[in-house]
Amino acid sequence: MKIHHNSDIRNMAKKELRRVIISGGGTGGHIFPAVSIANALRRRHPGVDILFVGADNRMEMQRVPQAGYNIVGLPVAGFDRKRLWRNFSVLVKLFKSMRKAGKVIDSFQPQVVIGVGGYASGPTLKQAQKKGIPTLLQEQNGYAGVTNKMLGRRARTICVAYNGMDRFFPADKIMMTGNPVRSALLENTQTRAEAKEALGFDPQKPLVLVVGGSLGARTLNSAMAEGLEDFEKAGIQLLWQTGAAYASSAAVDKARGYKNIKVMPFISDMAQAYKAADLVVSRAGAGTISELQLLAKATILVPSPNVAENHQYKNARALSDRNAAELITDDSAPQELVKRVVELVSDSKALAQMEQNISQMALRDADEKIADAIEALIP
View 1: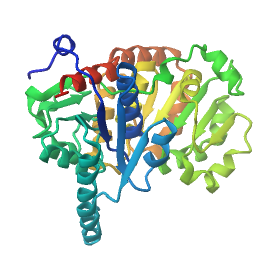
View 2: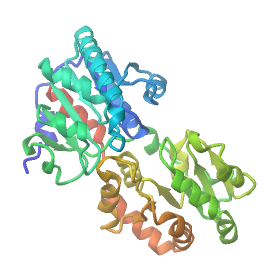
View 3: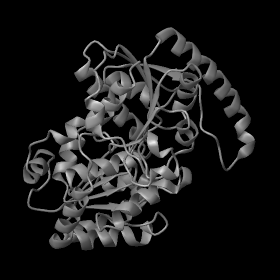
View 4: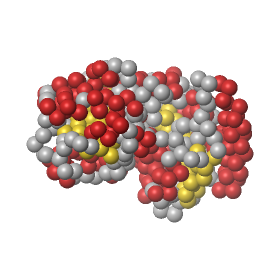
């Protein structure tokens, strides 16, 4: 497989980037990398005008402006693969989104358009390609999404985080960069004990961080609720992000009576939360995995079964096959997860080995490598 080398790209004559569109979204796993790429471009080109295009009524419409960028929403929606009769309205929304994306591109006149995955990126990238504007895809997963596979044929560059992606994309367009992560995660200088204390935990006791992604995870929440007494007996502390949709559920309310457990809908300072954790329990989104690799966190991954092409399971297998994380399937989690958390958090040798192995898989400076690739596309 032919892979572009960053040194070759950096040596190309640097041109000024004036206007760029970044499109995609739907979950934090798409938004955080997109913002990281935007930040890298702004560091290099302080005057660049960056416009995001996302999906109406999804979390990017709040999170992107919070990060300091403008965003336009499209009425696009994902296809319902289980209930096909519902897709007539999806097709109508897609048609409207294609028209609106075309108008946005004509008005904004971007030099380059970047897609970070998810159905929100489809109309924008498709229109850019029809108009002859250079496009770059950032594929975060080890199994390419439907939208990116469709767009990959006409994209100029495809930035990936896993080997073997020439199964999905033309090999000569692939650039191995890794996934960008939030820079704040790498800037926390606290020790583990200091981070625990700052969060109100006992620095001498083990702490497990449970994160079901930005939207929460029913399976993780249910399993944690069932294990509350087990955690208390074992002297295990829990920092538990439930997701907003589950914040007022009976399972979560039950946990609020335990002194060793802190429950919150969303953790704003993930750098401190990661730093404090002896063990992380998480879904297996590509962005989260990249964060865990860079931060060298011992992890139990419970892949979501409710994702396209079962890609989270494939993400998790890439780590578990190298003893860089443990994998528990979603249907096994109610029976196995709590028991394995209790066993693993007391096994310091196993945790240390997992930390070492996952760290070796990290691909660093992904945002800068992707910025290199974007600069190479400037007409």
